[in-house]
Image 1: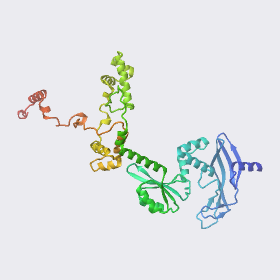
Image 2 (image 1 turned 120 degrees about the vertical axis):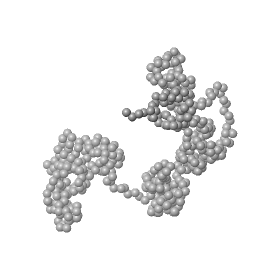
Image 3 (image 1 turned 180 degrees about the vertical axis):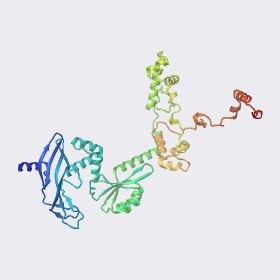
Image 4 (image 1 turned 135 degrees about the vertical axis):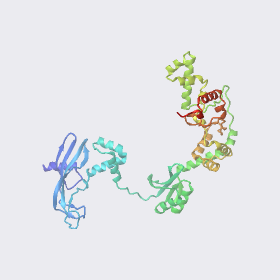
Length: 450
């Protein structure tokens, strides 16, 4: 019998000392292991003194790692000892088996380690699903709590540091991210991108030998003052990025020379006239409208009525009428959203002039038009310049619209008293109704009291 108990202990708890396995009960879903501690004494958790005086015992049921898809529960007999130190505030304390239990723990140490590893790999929700498949019932909050309880890993002193900026709100708020280039792991985040903050961070780490940064002046100043012993280099991405920007700027400045060197392409004999439609070919809304327009007109030419077209295509009567009345699909594209006025319209002529002079920097042009009254963002200026840069035809400012909008009141009516006087008094019918109402009205002076 003793040999069987020793073999069970070696199979179930191989790396844990001072514990004895008494019995194992296997059911369909649960494996229950009856065990107890065999140490002669325990260390008090309050004062650290050793005690061998047993006060009492009780049962604990910590969950263990599953076995063959079944949940494993330890039925552990735990003893309480009396503390011999009279100055200790704890009179009794419970023994803890090293490597197996902890104070107030409902799981064994190896189950805690397994769940923490799952949480590190998959986080909370996915980790809880995987644990359920492995036979451990746990919530996502518990998995995250176990991950948070892990001690912080010791980060070695970095030797090569990468410095770059990140945006908490693009165009408004920026910070500084520092990365260990050798391990490719982020080290720290600074709340701003000031040279003083970077210099203070680098001054606390004298082991830094190489600083990999972009060409921002505040990063250069912070690196020079905070780590004068370090070598400042540019990373591969910033080198290619700066090279592409310089090439684009050079091509934009000499685009007139490139146009002069480009031979004129031969024009086809039956080239279609350029469409004035705001929706180009390939746009999903334009293609859908053209397909529907072609389908409606094909059925009408075949002799079908509009009601028949409505039933066959599953459209409303208003849609069929609108498509049938339009001779070409381009007539359906009038009044679209892209023809609405923009806050940049008043400054597009200035941007066009500066573009023709060779200035293609969106940020510099935005700084020029802000004192002129522009209230928009830098992104809108950059989008307009991107359109000029990528369009096949020249993009220029649109002429001002002659359409004037009249302010109206609620429900599309003019506010009270806003109609022209000619409209209020010049209508013969209105004047006749007013005279008839005046004749039926009894004068106030003719009324008598009863």
